[in-house]
Amino acid sequence: MASSGYSDLREKLKSMTPHREEINNKFVDGMSNGSSGKARKRKIRESDDDEFEPSDDCAENMEQEASRVKSSILQESIFSPEECALIEEKIDDVVTRGEAGLYREHTVDRAPLRNKYFFGEGYTYGSQLEKRGPGQEKLYRKGEVDEIPSWVHDLVIKRLVSRGVVPEGFVNSAVINDYQPGGCIVSHVDPQHIFARPIVSVSFFSDSALCFGCRFQFKPIRVSEPVFVLPVRRGSVTVLSGYAADDITHCIRPQDIKERRAVIILRKTRPDAPRVDSGSPISASPAERPTLKAKRTHRRATSSAAHRPRVLEMDKEENRHPSNSRSRRHSISSENYWKRGQDSEKPRESSGRKVKMRRH
Image 1: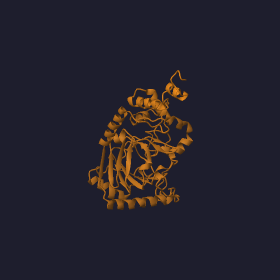
Image 2: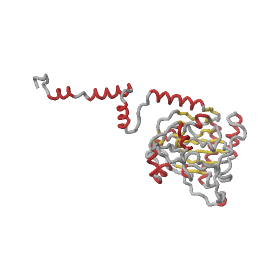
Image 3: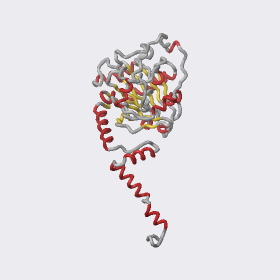
Image 4: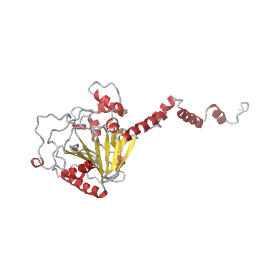
């Protein structure tokens, strides 16, 4: 030991093996300089959350995409707090009638922490589809859902027409989404073969946010970082067209619904939109069928509701089709989603995960 200049074996071993801190520093330097592709892959694999810092090119692309989204959105605060309060009373009346079973069967669609009320026109989606995939949605036949309530015309649509947001006679479909704290709607694009553009929405009860370019994962529910986040205030009107409506998905994240929130979505169906072709009679009117038992959840919302793991309808579908769920683990870009949708009838050789967009 003395001849080698070391008085302690541990010092000799230390000199023969690089210090752990030096290894870590080299690893970090390699990541920052982009010189070690293997190191980058190793870091990604070792991450429990599959998250990593985006490269400069990736960040620049996201900024460009966010700019394109922002440029195709119009937003304006139109309804005063007093007007909001009046409209919110009408929304409560809709909820009460729905729970009492006073609407047609396809007017009300229930999901955990979110109910939908279709008026004027309703359409099949999600688990209602005979063949899954974008482009398979169809309008119900005329009379399958209730007409647009007169208060929606008088208090909302006429106001938007007077402000030049939509032309007279444009709206023939109104949907009310009623969210409880922690509710969400997964990433989707409003079916282009069903609805004309623009897509108009009006927010009530509380402030929230509309996110673009997110990816959802479930069990427990998790949402990737959005490309763009648009704050939506109570009484504000949001108009989507162009890139924001057609070329990127949008969603409502659970963490963005901290209080009860409702949104009225106003759209126009395309004249050539496909309809359900069935030989069965149109659903019975409320007077001809028994009162439906309310399915709405009355679980008390807590401050942690937005982050509580929940079983959504998408999870149930994955359980029913386990062989299909395994092939949906990897993300795909919003730009090529619809291109893939056009080839949905061809055998799928890719193992790319398709973004769940069925519950919208």
